[in-house]
Image (tube, rainbow over all chains, first blue to last red):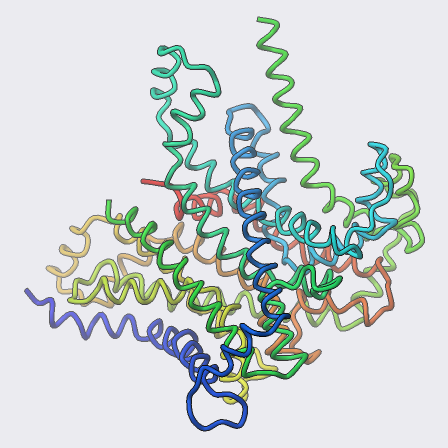
Length: 284
Length: 278
């Protein structure tokens, strides 16, 4: 009945957050659009910057590298996270301890992980020492155009997999035990139980992880900037690093803004999807 | 019977091996932090027990580290993270309360707008935000570091979920007793929301502690440099001195690790509740 009167009360409570959204999110987004439509020294809007970046081989290769990276890293991390969640979903004593070990890298800043992996991936570092046990000779890792992106994938996965595992583990624990009992009575083996019970029941957390993981992998920056600076031969030049390079190393702000708008649109699409899944859950 | 036991032992062994593989790089940091510079890469080929257990111990790297500007960076990181948690909790709890307890037209619209725009990781808009903040002369200031972390979509979402779970009668009874909205918030909802505040605070702390791109842009001066940025620049400052790097990595890692171990249930719950079904 007094719903309309409540607007002013609600606005008072919401004021700081709305101010933050307006100044720290909407304004920067609009500024990007504005700047991206102005080619250097121009006074009228045009799509010049967009035409320029999409015709630029360096930007093109960065987009392709980012897409290739996404296509490889997302399924890989989700499969690893699911495998770990299933492995660690039991009531054995001490399992909590091992779970914590898998989760620990999540808490450490990505820049710290990158710096440490830079040491571990040196030709005389820990990674080659471990490979040595299996009789594999020294690998060039970060200095090889063929292996550098794989190293970035390894480092980002080491950092992030524990986080996605935590979400999937909670999903696994929500599956009613009775479903598995029924499946066993029907004579299903372990694999059939996995495909007929586990996967369908995990649909929502798996979709969530897919979306959230995709967003975070589009924005990988610290490992690239610290480990490879986009090289060798631009083989690891992911889009965040490309934007940073354009704006701050090359000083080409206009085209960096166009690239930023492309990135924001991509993020908005993915985040809107993520939000829909989160609020579906909230209303039920 | 014997068969079941064998698979259980195998299962446990695989679990332990996985945990150890994930922990190995961290352990290597800790070991390297305490051994002389020349020993760090010395015992790697072939791999022996000395690789993972120091034979000679030294605290020199920590002394070097804390005689440098790194001590200041650690302080900056802590200060910025704690300020973000306090300020962020204030902003996010107020918003979450309005979006869950107060009924007003357009609530869902505001909620959608707010969460979607907060969920865009601010690294994506680092460049335009940098230009705005530079215009406002917030370069190299704590305010410039803290402000972007104050609105956290996940925190608003978690707190709102928590408030929605509290019975409506609480609010109705209080209002019959003559309490205003702010009193309902302050005297009834806030005291009940401890666990949700811890979860939201943890997310904001870890988020800010890990931030790299934004602090790199907005606060490059030594006085305001945070630890995550300063460790990445060690290479140039020390030549390639891996000892202090490892000691620094250890210092930066121990704080969030301790928090994670101590608050693990809160952290896991808050992470899990975003993705799992009801």
